[in-house]
Image (tube, rainbow, N blue to C red; front, side):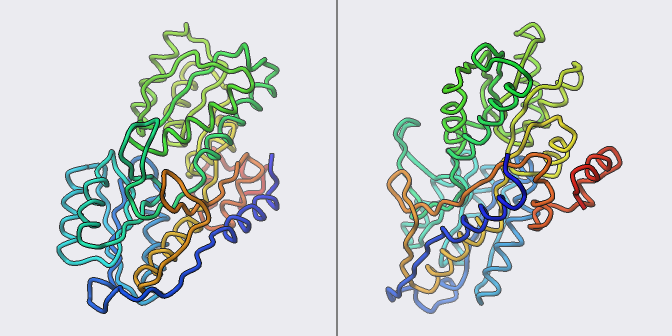
Length: 357
């Protein structure tokens, strides 16, 4: 398990790894449109980060650099996503930063590119092709190393089973993935499976993935019933889904290793209470900075480079880290959560125990 200091080092390394080297390429023009960054976020339900962290970080970066930021949220509605895009494109965009929502960003990307507007896929890839052979459509991709995210989650499950004295190869493990229409869901799954399968783990049940806490709870409850109420661990792709799974475990008097990601307030509370083994912390400020730095270079008519590639396009990869109860304070220190939100009455004792303040 990483200590708080090692997380700080990892975050610093992640920040230094964002090798955006811009060089003037002319172009960009001087029109109002060329100074506008158009951003579409996917929802408020899959994770609270989009409104509480991403929006303010992106808005501040663009406005501080002297550009206009048009940031809107589709609120889980693909039709609204398309409408927002049409409105933004009509007003004019110098660059589009799109977080995909169930494939809605693909058509928007193609429209923007026909108008000569560069598109940055933010956090989620925008692809065509099969799941086994995806092709990136966006001009750039900025996200965390999502296979690494899955690998960290998978390690939580392996370590949790061993700590409980259970042989991973004989354990009853349920896999609760994300929505398969989200390109990141496959990367999370692949990373987790690689680690878990190496330890001999095979899924006892694997419902269709979703990004919805209530549906995840329902799907897990059905899986648990099919297993006769027996489960040794649950690989879960994010904190919101993990919260749904934990409600079912609580109802059945069970406490087993559960993974997650996003370092959400609810996720961090569950980690402190011992109901969730850990959460993968993706420092949003680093991802937002990488995306806004890239977008600002494009708005200035520069041609950036990236530190990696994925599915045939430049990929700016940010490093995630694993957080257990001992590292929750680091998330607070970095400004991605507030102790006052985490340390509610039922979590106060755990906050004191682990120095969250």
